[in-house]
Each structure stands twice: as C-alpha cells, then as structure tokens.
Image (cartoon, rainbow, N blue to C red):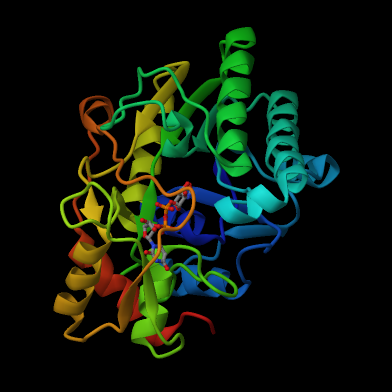
Length: 335
Ligand code: WQD
C-alpha cells in the first residue's frame, strides 16, 4: 500500500516524503517540476536510503494519473501540487484557478474511480481572510482571501467538503498553516525558489550568502511590538510531521476534518532577522523600506485542536529554522 504525494519534490512535499519514508510508508510522487528540480529525488534517497517511485506529470493529466493508480496500490493521498505565489496569482488569476482547481478535480475523479478514500489537503491559513481576529480557530467562518491563490485554497476546501458530503466514505483532512521556514537538518533539501524570492527566509539566506545585496524590511510602522509584521513561522519538518499525523487520523474514518498547524504565536520580521544573526553568528545587511501592499500587520493560528486530536505540536523553534535554512543555503540551495 502506498501514499501518493502530489507535488512531492516541492519544499513542503519533499520534507513530508522524507518523514513518510522514515515512518515506513511506501511513497509515490507525482510532480511536474514547475517549482522543483529532479535533484530533490536524489537528495531524498541520500537522506532516507530509499528512492520513491516518481512520475513526471501534471496532476491535471487524468490519463497519466490513472496510470499511476493502475501501476501502484495507492490507498492514501497527500495533495500539495499547486501554484502558490501570492503576488503572481494577482497578475495571473486564470492560470491559478485553472491549475489549482482543475488538478484537484482530476485527482478527486481518479481517486473515486480507484476507490481511494483518504486525502490530506495542504491548504493555507489565508482562507481565514482579513475579517477574522487572530489567533484563528478552525470553527471560524472563513473569510475572503485577498489573492486568487488564497481563493483557490478556499474554493478547494469547499469542493472537498461537498464531495465528502456526497461521498461520506471519503475522509479528508484539511491542513491550514502560514509561513513554513527552515530545512531538513541534513542541508540536502530546503526552500529553493526560482528567481527572486518572495518569502522572507529565502531572501534572508541569500543576503547572508552574498547572492543578494540587501534585505528590504517592508515597513516598521505597523501596530505591532516592534513595528514590523508578525507571523506564525513553522519549521518545515514540524509541518511535515503534522501531515503524517493527519494521515494517521484518517485511518479512523473521521470524515471531513480541519486542523491549523502552527506554533500558536507570532514572530516579527526584526525578531526573525535577529534570531538568524544570533544563531548563525553573522550580521545581515538590511534596510527598513516602505510597506508591501497587501501585508497584514499580524496573524497566527491557535493550533490546540491539532494537539488534542492529532497529538501533534511544533517541537522546533524559529532559531532551529534559522540554523537549518542557513545550512541549506550554504550547501545546496540554487544548485
Ligand atoms: C513574511 C513577512 C513581509 C520578504 C505568504 C503567503 C501565505 C503563505 C506564506 C502560502 C511579511 C516581510 C518579506 C522581504 C520583508 N504562502 N518581508 N522583506 O506574506 O506572510 O505569507 O507566504 O500559503 O499564503 O501570503 O510571507 O515570507 O512573504 O512575508 O520584510 O523581502 O516578511 O512584509 O511581513 P507572508 P512572506
């Protein structure tokens, strides 16, 4: 019996595949490399001693997807595959709606055809929108994400809820999280954005490595502790283990369940910068710049439900993530 991981050579996907293999699962990956590289498969093999079966295809491709299910006994799926750049989604909404929603519909149709009943969906805390007060809890009415990217996550959650309602034998775990950071302690896999990083941590590591000149802190006049935005930064290895905990939960046939995965607290941009400098014994070149449109001052999640029901909580700290991201940047990022 195998777990199918769509987007399994991506940042969160690859870390989840490592933990799945370490936990004794057989893994099959489907990925089109739109945001990853073939070298990730070799890295997974180096870390775990096993190379997962791999299909280079787009999840939208139902013919290709059927072949995967015909050639492997898939009994659970973790669905990461999707476009995920918030800013890009604003300029390319059609591409995001087509890709992220169609690929999920194709996956659900093929899962139904092969009677595969357990799905973990990688969603995003962005579905809480701006209307809700933080810390966000799963019972809140969902908001209206500002980006088409966030809306695809919201729409997919709604689709999954409706499909589960019509097919109660389908078990779905929706996982909502914010800002994954860090890398596997081996330094062999990590966040490897192509081109100029949008997210904070890869920008920090590339400035530290001298690949970029200066980190621009987008605003220090927010109503927060030090004026810079606060976020719930979660170590990607903790996040991967959260996906395994959700997979386990589905074995008890819970139906449609939702969990926040996070630390439950916010860290500011300046705090993360200072953590990075302290733990790696270096000074970062940064300047305070104007605000980035669309940024919210602060948000984070209440992850107590995952603790109660999945027996999962974060174990690694932001400093662990700063150490591991720097280790990844020094040894492998961008290769
Ligand atoms: C974090 C903070 C920036 C870069 C996004 C998506 C969210 C999720 C995670 C998928 C903010 C500041 C950043 C820089 C900076 N993705 N920053 N200089 O925007 O919180 O969340 O990624 O689910 O959906 O919205 O992440 O890393 O871009 O920014 O000052 O060069 O760092 O202003 O306050 P964000 P981020």
